[in-house]
Amino acid sequence: MSRLVILALIVLVPSTAHAGQAFPGEPRELKSPDGALTVFWWEPDAASPKRSLLLRAAVSPKSWRIYEFGRSVLVEWSPRGHLLAITDRETSDGSTTSVYNPDTREFADVCAPAVRDLGARWTEANRRYCELTGWPSPGRLRLHLWGSGRGGDFDLKTTVPVSATAAPP
Image (tube, rainbow, N blue to C red; front, top):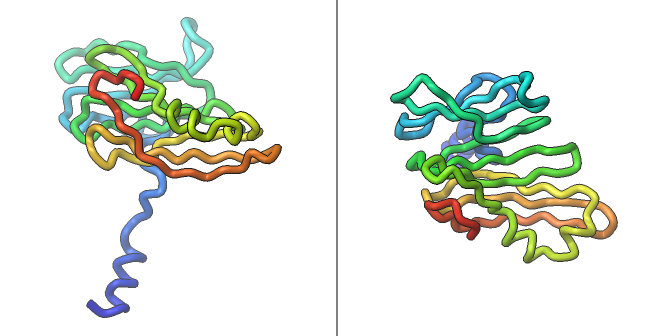
């Protein structure tokens, strides 16, 4: 293959630096790959001053609240649609990522092992981010951790195992 063709392919292939769907925004919903579930966001209401992520099964008109957030979230279904990764962009200085299992209705903090490995570099940073970048396979989630300030600068990309039960890895 010529260098010109390879260069054209590189330019035409979209970047995958950030995966998932950002909420709030359009579209307002994201269906699971198998079509069984849809996650969507809702504006604050009388029950909560924060926005909500709601889940709806394809076989039912009812939905239920699974998560509340203030600023924005990035969500992405696992390739088989059995788990939902959620990056909560909590503040301008930090974000965290968890995985939700709709079957058990449990969350797992998938950032915890990498944060433990970073140790003082994580705790000393003024700005700390742990964001999903995609699912390379159904049981593995790619994360990007970075931060800066007070000598705690770091930039790490890692892949973490995610249990089908959404128990912490």
